[in-house]
Amino acid sequence: MAMENSSERSSVQLSRIQYVSRAAPCIQMSDVDAIVSRARAINSYSGVTGQLLFTGAYFFQVIEGPFDHLKNRLSSIRLDVRHHDLRTIEEIDIERRRFERWPMQYVQDFGLQDLVEELWWSQKVDLARAAQLVQYLTHELLVLPRPGRGT
Image (cartoon, rainbow, N blue to C red; front, side, top):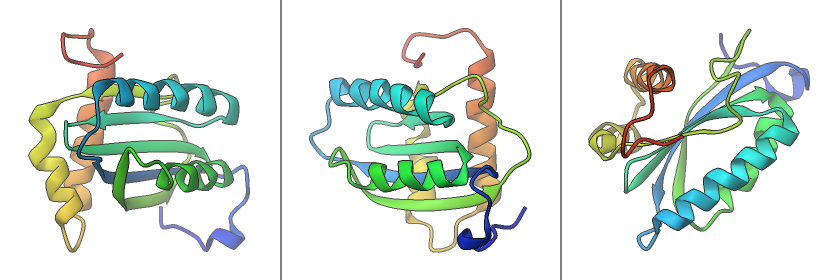
């Protein structure tokens, strides 16, 4: 669905935002763990769900929930010094959540760095490639956790 003018959107309308950002050069795994822990707490309270992918150099995140809550979360995320150069890939209205059971699911996959970096550098975002990445992440939630994969 196409994104409406944000001033016309209902505060209860479900939306999904996808973004990619570059990790701070000195980021540690303890920093990423702190990001995930805090996101889970805040998202549980505010009705936001989603998934965070960390590739070692980039973050790719999908968040979904009431539009106003997503915009507040995104504003807060933009201020976090553990990453920079945030680029919104897609903002859409949705009828149902894709990550409804996860306040913030986390996947660490260094093998996806090239794909996420491509999304970040692209002049025109390839939404089909972004959709493939979201599909992959959704599939990762359905399989048993493996070493190196998040919880």
